[in-house]
Length: 428
Image (cartoon, rainbow, N blue to C red):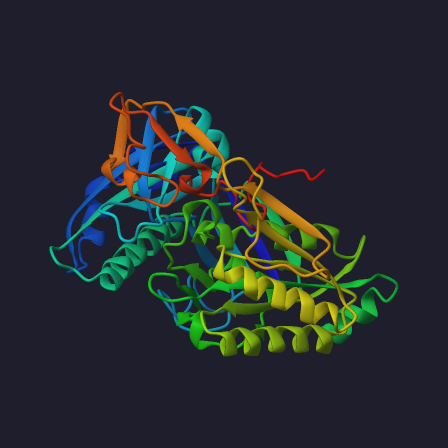
């Protein structure tokens, strides 16, 4: 599979008469966008705000973040199985509005939603403070069920991202990057002297607003399987979950998965990146056993020497992580796991809910329980009241002057388990 990503660098965003990209600025027709999103009968109202790096703005509660992309050439369309047909994607050409994002907010869907500060100390913990954000404020109709509310907000974000992506279809990119993923045998033949490496990505799929979608299918209804890494760059995997904000893989994270990008960067140089496996995270023990058995079987089938395993979420999924690690190691394959920690506010507690001696190579995104004070902002987009009840907050988190005292758990992307952040931890 060969994919070209054409990056169109967005340096600013503003409202205007026509939605277009002009001299590095994304211009947004606010009324047209509101009209598009308001077609969903489950939404009572929709509004649009802009949030740029350095603005004294706090966005909360954040549901998802999506990067606008559009298929320029090749089979399928962006977000296959959801907004496009289920044709296999990951080949051809795709244009990207790099530096822009759609952020969804509004009345809280589930308590595990987060905060994005565009300036101040909180901005250092989220990559989304560096983006030119178009924020959708989607308010649900009264008495709407939570799963219907989640879907309405999810679809609003995806539609907006496609809407912006379409205006970039005929623009010449500022930068083009190519990604080649060969069939297994051809890849081995091309780099026979290099160690063979695969990537196992765990997808949140515990249900009850903890969902991820693969080509439109809820991941908990799938078995561990092979997928082309470039398929993910075309939106084959999207977020539908409300897990803790710090380690939620938003749709933006999936589209820009840094593990995949780093593996491609070193492919053919330090090792041979021969394939990728996706596996789900389940609630019941039998499902955990089944999925980890299949992940290990597929890693063995690929004949790899090493595997990187990334997690999403914490607690219950720690068991899936350790099962995947242990079983793959037992196949004679070396593993590195990527996770984060819930080690208590003092950092002294056991960081994972499960462990095994074979899990001896660990990359961590940091301790989600660390406490931070976020200063007041001039403007709030969304609703500020839920910060007392979202994961990482507590009764009294919101202070009278607008300051917030929360754990890093409440900041969107703070301890991301794909390594999409600047935070880590050091053991002694």
